[in-house]
Amino acid sequence: MTTIEDVHRSDVRRGTPSAAVVEARNLGRDYKFGEESIHALKGVTFDVGEKDYVAVVGPSGCGKSTLLNLLGVVDSPSQGTVRIRGHDVGSMRDREATSFRLHNIGFVFQRFYLMPTLSALENIELPMAEAGKKKGERVARGRELLAYVGLGHRERHRPSQLSGGEQQRVAIARALANNPAILLADEPTGELDAKTGGEVISLFERLNGDGTTIIVVTHDEVLARAAHRRIHMRDGSIVDE
Amino acid sequence: MRFALAWSSLRRHTTRTLLATLGVAVAAAMLLDMVMMSTGMRESFRELLLSRGFQLRLAPKGTLPFDTDATIKNTSGILTILRTNPAITTVSPVLGGTIQIPRGNRVVTSSALGINPLVQGDYELLAGKDPLADDAIVGNDDFLKATGARIGDTLDIASGYDPELRTYAASRKMVLTGRVRFLYGAADQLATAMRLGTLQQLSGTEHANDASLFMIRIRNDSEVEGVRRWTERMIPGVSGISTATALVQVDQRLSYFRQLAVILGSVSLFVGFLLVTTLVTVSVNERIGEITVMRALGVSRSHIVQQIVMEATALMITGSIAGLGLGLATGHYLNAILSSFPGLPVAINFFLFQPSSAWTALGLLALSGIAAGVYPSFRAASLPIATTLRQDAIA
Image (cartoon, rainbow over all chains, first blue to last red; front, side):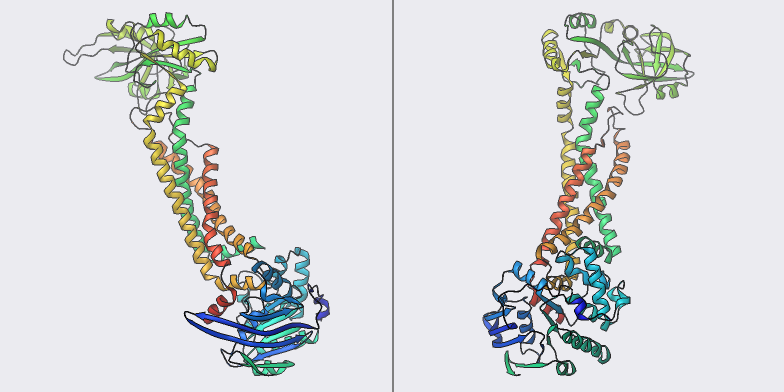
């Protein structure tokens, strides 16, 4: 069986040396709706270390997804800083942020978001093609990752020919394509039944066991319990850990 | 990978893509036809005027070179003057007229050209011989069909019919020696040619020294303008019409067609542009979630723009190539209709295909395809990732 050592040849672009992979300091995010200002995130501070497995839990609207967007460099904080592997990602311009996401962040979404016209293998190739990797290299790594998530026999299948659990496993393989520093997952079991959700949870445990740093936002108690750390949020703040 | 994504996006809704391609093909066909029409008539006229190597025509003032009803007096005197100019190598005088041929209990009326068969530039001999003898005549297929005559037959040729007296001014027997195709003949026009002197005699004593037109070959093209000015100075009452000046006259008389072509061509280009913009915008709106996820995965804005512009351009180019065939077919069909326009030479092509026309049409469409992809692609690539993902999830 393929192990993460086979597929996780880290080529992460390292910045200032830091013990923590993620450092969030006094992180805040405000949204304006007309005259009204909503404080979605209020002064959040925490670190995530190498090979950590963190679950962010809390009621809907507590700021979990906002936090994940800031850590994933798809949004910018209104206050505070986020550093990932020493890089201050909160102040990056779009071009720099895009490149940083490509090489350092792996995203897994609740709704999988695979490209419906591409095969499983081509979906995994997509971030590698963007990173300029050659076809042969992309195909070889894509097959390794598919084998790792247990879908080696499904590489030519389109998303519509895969079950929900299989689609999510392909999405996880896609997130790992460019050896990211962290894997961010937003409700990865939200659209799955208990059995297939369990398979994804097992896959996360195996990935973390093989050295992948994971931050997952979830309402799923089983998934949250599988993580090593749980950050509880309410009204935009961390209330317990 | 961008090409694969663009291609797969177009294949996702096959029927919609096919319908859009068909729409672009129709617009492209119309654009090509209009480009062909705007340049084709002029080019066709130029080719026709130069087809037998005569660079200059002398015609009565205010007429076009193929208007053979007009007359110039003193042909022999004009020929003598023209032969004094060493730059002129060949002079071919032409007289236009009408003849009647009684056939049984009916009379066939045909146009006739009086020419010098050794230097004529009005017809191509298809079969038989030129009318070298005074009693020889050649005719086109319509003439042969209307009279039922064959090469070698002797025909009664008359002219100057007086409808009150029901008599002819002159008549003679002539031998049909050849079958010809007239370069400037109109569609379904019965036409014949004979020696100039023969037609002058048939036309009556008052036309015994008339011509309708002189066609002139000049040694060097660079001398044409000088000879043209010289003839107008030496021979009052005639216009020297070089190929260039004839084209200017043609341009003036046919400017309506060109304006029409430009307007309709612009409209078809704009319709194609709107069609592709609408289709690509709809397609992008359906894929907002996917595009935003691609951005979240690290795909750059420029690559998103490239992919969508590629889709629009592919639609335009595929439709344009299909439209090329459609445009040629419709151009051929319309040309057949317009060529029967009364009084115009059948050899004139209204829709003359020139590779440059096709490239111009394809180039314009490719550019509008790129322009059509720009708006939806920039819109998609500029969406805020976090907000769009949240909205897509809620939707």
